[in-house]
Structures are given as C-alpha cells and as structure tokens.
Amino acid sequence: MSDNAPARPLRVAIIGAGPAGVYAADILAKSQDKSEHTFSIDLFDRYPAPFGLIRYGVAPDHPRIKGIVKALHKVMDRGDIRLLGNVDVGSDLTLEDLRHHYDAVIYATGAIRDAELDIPGIELEGSFGAADFVSWYDGHPDYPRDWPLEAEKVAVIGNGNVALDVARVLAKHAESMLTTEIPDNVYEGLAASPVNDVHVFGRRGPAQVKFTPLELRELAHSQDVDIVLYEEDFEFDEASDESIRTNNQVKTMVNTLTNWLVEQEERTEEASRRLHMHFLHQPVEILEGSGEQAGKVAGVRFERMELDGSGGVSGTGEYIDYECQAVYRAIGYFGSEVSGVPFDSRRGVIVNEAGRVIGDDGAHMPGTYATGWIKRGPVGLIGHTKGDALETVGCLLEDIHQLPPAASPEEQSIIELLESRGVEYTTWEGWLQLDQHEVGLGSEATSKGPVERERVKVVPRDEMVRISRQLDRDLG
Ligand code: NAP
Image (cartoon, rainbow, N blue to C red):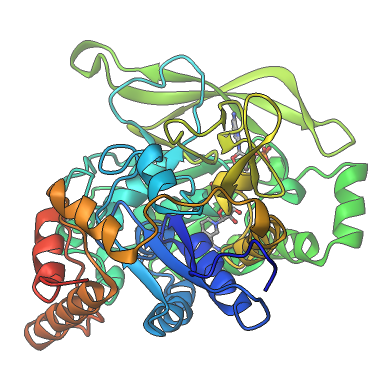
C-alpha cells in the first residue's frame, strides 16, 4: 500500500443502476483483487427498482435482452455493492452531499429523453416522442398510465432500433404481447387500438439504416401483420455498394429487405394490419387537421431525398404528404443534465475525457467520472457500456492517490442523512421482494387468464416503494 493510501475502504457513489452503473460497480468491486485498495460502493437510482433502461427501455417482447438482467442480478446478489433506490440526486441528495460522503462519484445516468425534432407542427396533439411511448409501455412509474391510442394510421420517424420497437409494438396484436411483463393497462390500451397501418420513415436509403439484422428480421414474426416495401425506395449509390460489400451487417439487412420486396408480390392472403417501411423520406412538417381536427396531427409532409454518393442524402425538391393521426419521432435519445455537473447541451453528454469529468476550466474535476450513454451519447448496444465502464474505472484507479477524501466516509452516515430527510430509499433486498411480488402477480394472472405471464410489473411508484420497503425497515 502506498504511503498516502487511506487505511479505510474508498467510498464510491455510482449514480444510476442501469447496465452502465452496474457494470462500473462490478468492475470496480472486482479490481480489489488486484489492488492495494478496497472499495465500498453505493449504487444510487432515482427509481425504486434497479436496471434502468433494461426495465424501462427494452421492449417487453424482447426477452432475449431482458436476459441481461440475469447477469446484472448475479452481480448485485454477490452483496458487495449496496443499492440505494428511490433517491434522486439533485433533489434528495446534492453534489455537496456526495462530495461530503464519497471519495469519488461516477455518473451513469444514461439518456431517457427524446432528441428534439425541430420541424413545424411537432407540438400538435398526436405528435409523440418514442422514448415517452417506450416509458409508457414499459410501465415507467413517472409516466401517465393512459396513452392515447386512437390513430388508424401512424407514422414513425427514424430508422434505428427504437423506431422498430415502437412500430412493432404499435402494429402487433395485443394478445401476442400478453405473455410478456406488460402491465395490464398497457395490454388494455394496445388491445383497444384501432391501428391498421404503421409507416416507418428513414431519411436515408436501405443501406444506411441504423437498426440491426436480428431486430429487422423479427418484424416478420408479428402475426397477422404484413410488411410493405416500396420499390422506388431501393436506391443504392457507390457508398451503399461499398458498405454492402464490406459490412456483413449491412449486406444481411439489404438482403432481408430486398427479399421481402420480392416476396410481397407472391402474397396470397392479406393481414389485417400493415407495417410499411419507407426510405429516402426526410420529415419537413407535421400537418394539422382542420375544423374539429384543428390542433391535431393529420399527416406528415416529407421531402423525397436522393443519395449523394457518400452515404448522405440531399433533397430533391419533391414533397409527399402522408395521412396519419399520430406521429412518433424515434430519432435518438438525449441525456439529461445533472445540476452542477458540466454538460454538453449540444450532444446531451457530461463533458468528459475518457470518463474523467472536465470542469469549465478544462481540468479534471477531482473524483468525478462518467460512464455509459451519459458519457458518450445514446449509441451502441447494452454490452458496449461494459467497455465504457472499463475505461472509466481504469481512470479512477489511475487517479486513486489524488481523490479528494470524503469528510464523512462511514457507510451509515449517508443512510442517516437520507433518513433525516425522510427519503424512502429502497435496497437490493427490497428489490428481491418486489421482484418476487411481480413474478407472483404473473403466476396469479396465468392461473386466471388464457396465457402464461412471466411477471406483471408494479407501476405506481408508491406501491413499488411500499412493497420494496416491507423488508427494509432497519438497514444499516
Ligand atoms: P439511432 O440508432 O441513433 O437511430 C436514430 C435514427 O433517427 C436514424 O435512422 C437517424 O437517421 C434518424 N434521425 C436522426 N435525426 C433525424 C431527423 N432530424 N430526421 C429524420 N431522421 C432522423 O437511435 P435509436 O433508435 O434511438 O437507438 C439508440 C441505441 O439503442 C442504438 O444503439 C440502438 O441500436 C439501441 N437499441 C437497441 C435495441 C435492440 O433491440 N437491440 C432496441 C432499442 C435501442 P440517420 O442515420 O440518417 O442519422
């Protein structure tokens, strides 16, 4: 142990118990095997339950991704990372509180908001952000329980995996979602939806899509939903040919789309719902209805685009209007600012270099780090945040002798502070209780209903906290 290494464990707070936060906590905890230092790690989340975007961002019909929860559960179940849920950093705890109680803080707050789409009509009734809709169907406690699903024709803007998630959930018949963990209100809302046509619009071509092959192919497995493609959208320039030649993922997706285009000619039966995929359509305006429909979405105007040879597009000056009663923009997520932490409001990330948070003076803010989507923006699959966590924790370990020591590093002191402020924090034991409760609700529903339900999510925050805290009365 070096001379100035503290005799006590270093106290580290990680803010955000999504995959990014849990990976960082895991890597830090495991680094103790090779280090002279020991760590005492608190993992905070503003929600009563852990797992962030896996619980509140992954589509319920994606159990494969939900499987990642099993790995994260195993990490947390080891018992060397303390979960403190239902704690909002910013209101329940300030930055000063964190500095007072911890030697280092890692922000892993992710990105849950929708990126802005600055076109006329975006504020109309019936124009939604995909992230908000995802939060609704994933039973996010801070979102309204009702979602207006009144449209027969829907437009989804964007060609990423979120656009596919939203389009698939909107187009699917609700019965096929019942086996998942969707809350009852979500099932009932989807079951009453009058939707017939969901149109997905990408601004570039079929070789420039951002979604991934598995997620694309999955669209074809929705029962009684036809995929409809348009021959005039199948444009490929030099850059497209190059990526088809050199990138297997692009090649697979272009093949899939082209096969569907050919196969749709041979279709003998028509499904009751259609999922249309359009390319080379740039949204320019959301159109408003008239008379009784004033203030509401009546359609979207697109400019027809053409490929510019380098993978980009330019406008053709030709405009096309599509009738629809709802528009979902799925053009990317955006990070939220944590008060007092330097934020790049253009990119929606905490200002950082390799995970070290950089202050206005251009210097590293001692003991302050970022990881995951709030560090590098909302791109990449869940597994990629592991690489981020490795880099960030690596920086923290390099800086270990310069960390500003906490004034109150005792594990109990933060609990006393939360209790003195009346914060009803939840713990890992509390989550196990809630988890068990939700699985129990699933079995109950299975015994009454027509299908097997793996779990039924508890949505209201108060109820989540109440169930979680039944076991938690005397943490310390
Ligand atoms: P994304 O992959 O970045 O896709 C955003 C899409 O929006 C792109 O097609 C982009 O087009 C388009 N776009 C951006 N600005 C636009 C504008 N002004 N007008 C029209 N279109 C615009 O973002 P995402 O779909 O939100 O996904 C975020 C990350 O989560 C991705 O890494 C994704 O793979 C991951 N994810 C994975 C799954 C899964 O099931 N595996 C599910 C959900 C999310 P350009 O390409 O032309 O910019």
